[in-house]
Image (cartoon, rainbow, N blue to C red):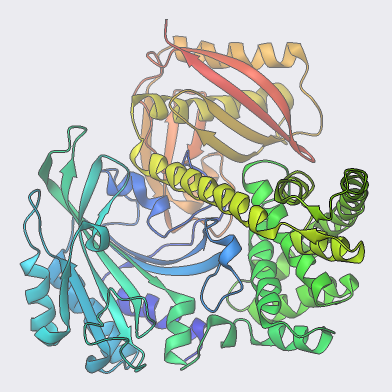
Length: 586
């Protein structure tokens, strides 16, 4: 079964069970203050899981484009992907465990035709904080899963919480038995030997954990689920890896034709990073030296490094983009619409990277000369890492050049430094994700509202060409990216500041209305007006000053937000300016 068929079956199944199909949110998050990319289907729905009402109702389903950055360096093995698609269904205070589990079982066994004997499930085993999730286990038995296929694990495996405090609860995970031999007599779903592959996770948010670590029952219970599309396609097609499915097959075939050196790992890296880069660029991402721009730059450059490794002519990049676009346009029509932009961005980055490689070679030549003068025959690992971290110079190229100069390389030293760097990056990414989901407090809500005032003020002062192209909010400040061709003048900055502060001082009421997408457009609400919106949207109106489509949450009145102060105005990327601002409580 092809991936798109699985997706369509999923959405149709849940539509038939009373769910509204909502669009995938963009990969570049709009209202989550803390993440570089949309990393899960539930992420754009956090305000609704925390209590906001969703305009599409209490039963929702969609496919969500996702990017996770913590495992970029693992891509190339048989399972890791940076970009992936997550299928999900949600209950916002509607159904709970019994109906959720019954629907999951029905979808797997009837729609996807997976034999019951292939399905194993896990549930929360209970601890001092919360009891064993007997109800979920009973629901699975009632649905048709034998007791011998049900396992219980602790919070590390079967519990979900957004951050250190907030809504949380047990989850139940579904696993597919691949038929591979068991690694031991105790082989079970928690084992990572490859026999059991996790395919779906249903989270039951029924508790609230406070700052002191105490758990209480929620009055409104939610269900959040996630099923990985590429993994499911791989299993149903009986393939060993996602790279063997139709999603990657044409690009993998072309790379095999083009390569002069055979390396399956490099082919996978090129195929995966190209698809990820194309998806990010299509959703508005651009290479840069910070944040998501740095991730995109890293993906493109790693792809180019491995094309060089396989001795594939870099002029073939355009051909590879065309193959991917044609192969994926049914699933992602925007790729075809944005193909020209995608080509332009990737080829520009390729040209910059070629210059970087040239620069790195010059720096390496200096290090070689120093080592020879000191009578050394080995390049230190710190130098290899410095060239990689500072110039993006590939360690394998350093090694090759050293060997050409009859010198060894301390690759063990490099690997140690690289792993330390990787661990810091992973921790940083996890912390960033964790903070954003839980951190909807008084400060972040005020900053979120301030972005609406800032957006409108910029339109008034600079012109109607101004459009939001990204935002990032913490408890201490807001960051707002917008389209504008040149640096703002001191006078323009002051005018924007004054306009925002005037609206705050007026103590304007913030009103939320639900209406159709078309009515929102007619009403003059600011919005991107693309297919990312569902049939119904929320429109937040701030007095007679601002009207914008948004998910929330916002303050009810502007008066207590504090004094708005722009701290910095700078370039973010070509044609995009960035403002950093604070709200000062007086």
